[in-house]
Image (tube, rainbow, N blue to C red; front, side, top):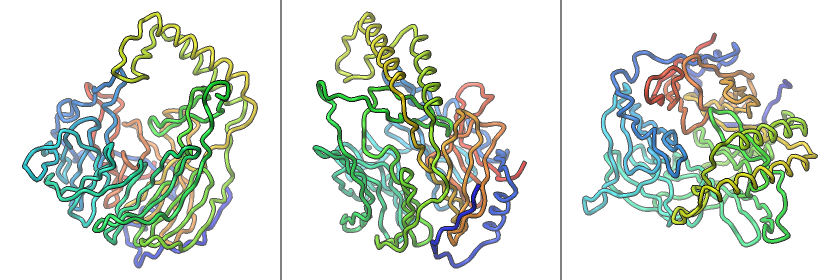
Length: 434
């Protein structure tokens, strides 16, 4: 792969010994993640992660968990659709389940995922349906509420008592994707980047076929189909944000832009990823679509009920059958209309290691391959090498909500391949070479 250099200066004053070791591991080639046998011993995973088997309208929800590390190395796990969090000690031992306690001493009945830590002592959560960001201490005691009037995709803490947010809103004729910096003390915010996407007319005879790349991340890999009922929701690959020292990095997968801001939102530099944009060829798209068609054709039952408003639960088995036949018919029509290659975003996600290096993961073309190409950036922003991650024991889910660096280790919520009962584990990996 062609070497490239970003003219980006990320001010980091020292390069630690551990950082040097991590870079050396990356440079030696394939990186192997080896579970630390001394971590998280004695936990009854069937009990600790009993919510793994949660479903909503027949769809599995139990793996919709994420982790956050506290300054002392403790771990808190978010449990989607539950009103509590799961706490583990620095050694990985299960400690407790806790919720958020309001000023009246009552526990919130509904909570959102912890998104980050501000001031090294306060959690801030994702937004509820009213745009409330609940902030609370490490014991779950309520501290304050911040208010935002939009939907969010990502939120991270900044070192100057502020929070960077990737947000989006639906306007009458456009979608607006943007990055904002929110002041924790005043709730004031500053939009530093924005992008508008036209909102197409999907009504009546104007309903058009979107040759749209419908993605979801399973095991870090990419599944896709060009199903015609896919909907636009703004940028198909919204910005990723990462904080390194006192710099905020905004990386846009769709365009390949890399923008560096200070933590007050002032633009410092702007560059663009120079590696070539990959495409999904017409042939590959048709193969993907045909596989999706065959999958739907092989379904003996199709639960259309969970796709619509939960209160409407009157869909009969015959209506479900008709719905499935219609979907297959639409997909077959879509197959015949595939005519253009689709560009793949320049990267899938970014993970910051414990030494401030950025790992850019590309979209893997093979599902469940457990090998992921990465681009490593040293603290001065220069391209260093390309590598990949592998693991024998776990099906890796490459996602910053599932995989976090801390003191040279990777802490993850990962699925054990050979597991009795619940396969989900809190695991600490040593980062080594094969």
